[in-house]
Length: 430
Image (cartoon, rainbow, N blue to C red; front, side):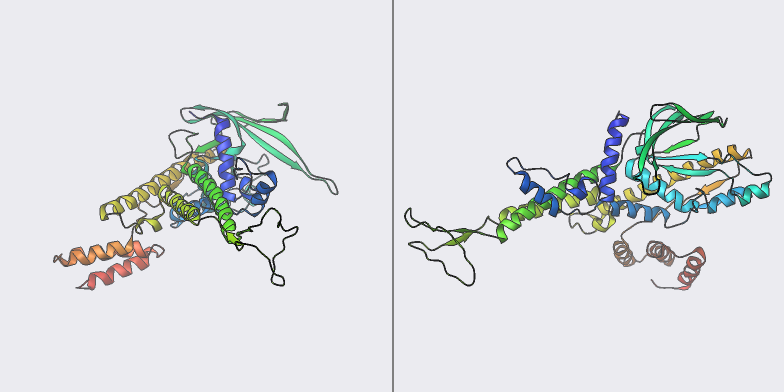
């Protein structure tokens, strides 16, 4: 099992790949050639450019999951207020959970703390007006300092935070703090672990919850693999640039005898070059190396498309049979369904803690889409046309049309969809 220190090192690397920061912005992730002088290496670092393959993959999955709004309901008025602002920053539950999913997909782990203001107000009206309600904190896994699990949930957890202190006309400084949370209390400690603040919550559970799509808390995610391949492509593009520069700016060779060596050689459009015996010539490296590099970069990009389940690449591979293509789309839809079920359960856990803070009876339900129906529309149309030639019944044709509507029109509401279905049922031919 991976240690927390190893996991945090990988998370930091993934974060740099996602944001294009760290070694991807300053050239630190470029490998120095064995005989490359520092000046040449620094020059390569300055002109290197990074192509972000990770962010589009994350955004694509977020788009799939949150294209259809999850259905949430509660008869509790306070819960409805939380739906509209769940983090005391004005974020709706949809926006907040999408950010939680981003962390879970990126790092393989997302952390959320359910907290409660200390001052609740003298009445329910004041509590509503002052928004003195439980709220969520989205915590980066990089802030995880230590923990202990009990049946998959935190028995206790320690979070590491950097608190920035600013004063007018003075340089800002950061102070490290540690937050210890268990099933009965919360403690804020200094960098030397001295208790700064402490209070009891007596919830009976640790109000920090983990969302992980892997087999365990530190299982990781495919994003680490994408980040590693992205680094290799980053290096390959820099190395390719070196080859292209060598081919574009050729080297002048000048045939000179021992007694006729020029003291100064300057070639331009307004002077001439004298030579003896063999004429001068320009030489450059073979273009084969550049071709090999470009081919390798293309292969690496293909691997990223494959492991990130990019549907845009599914139907572009000529060697994929219809069965193989169908399997790829089924795999993608299965992954989306797994993510959705995980988010459903995670929201229920969060709101169970909310009701504990409120001292109220649990009253919350949540349902995500169960079928994302990501498929290759053009292939499905071809299949429908081919099967029609076999004389399929009208009922089959109408059912197939409705399936194509679901694939093509993902953003229409149920009323529009039912209207189209009714029109389909009145038709006699496909």
